[in-house]
Image 1 (tube, rainbow, N blue to C red):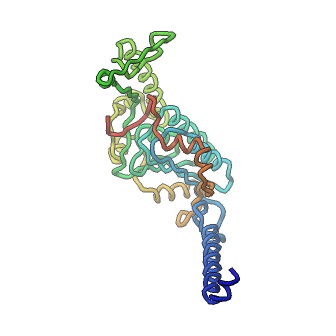
Image 2 (spheres, rainbow, N blue to C red; image 1 turned 180 degrees about the vertical axis):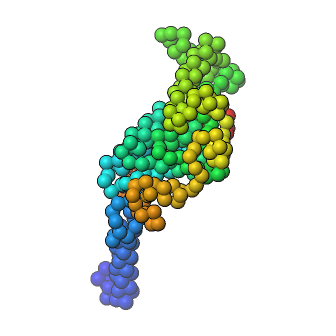
Image 3 (spheres, rainbow, N blue to C red; image 1 turned 120 degrees about the vertical axis):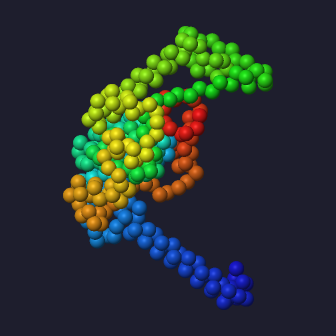
Length: 303
C-alpha cells in the first residue's frame, strides 16, 4: 500500500475523493428520504393531523397486518379519518370477516372510507362493508357475493401413475374432499350445508351494513360480478369516485383541509435481511396461496 501511494499519489487521491463523494450522496439520500417519507407524504412544517391510508391488496389469506394497521390508526390521535384502499378479489372467509369486524370497530371511533380500485370483489367487498362509505370507480369489478371451496380430483392421474392412498380415519367424513376419489353424496351435502351457512352470514352482514332486506340481497348475491356503476344502481356501494375522491371525503369527515390533506401511511420496517424474510411467517403466508382447500369469499374468473 505504501509503495502504491508513493508511485500513484494522484490515483490514490481520486479513489479517496470518490469514496467521500459516494458517502456524501448516501447521507443526502437518507436525509431526503426521511423528510419525504411514505409515512408522512408531507413536509416537516405541516400539520401532524391527517388521513390514515390502509391498503388491502391481493388475495386475502392473512388478516394480521391489516388489523394491526387499523388498530394503530384507531388509537393515533393524529389520524382523524381513514381510507381503506382495496384492490382484492377476496380470499379466505375467516380473514375477510376479521377485517370487516375491525373496519366496523374502527369506524365507530373515527370515519373509515372504503375506496375500491380495480377490484373489490367477494371478500374484498366484505371488508368494505364495515366502512362509513364505500366508493368505487365506474369500472371497478365488485360483487361476486358468495362462497366457494375447491377440491382437486386427481383420481384419473393417480391411476395412470400407479399411485394408491391407504387411509385410516376416525369417522366416515374425516377425509372429505380427498383427491384420490370422487366425492360421495353424503360428503357433498355436508360441504353444501357448510357453504350455505357461511353464505347466510355474508348475506346478513351485507343486509345490516347496507340497510337492505336479506331477500333483496340474496337476489343480488348469486356470485355475479358487478361494475361500480351497476353496484351503485342496486345499492351495494354509496358513490362513484377514485382514490383522490375518497381522500377528500375522508378529510372532510375528519375535519381536515380537503384541498391538501396530509396522508399518513402505516409505519413499516425498512430494514431488509434474508433472516427477517425467513423469520417473518406472515410475509411468507401472505405471498403464497394455501395448498389445502379453504372456504373462500373469492373471485378469480378461473375455475
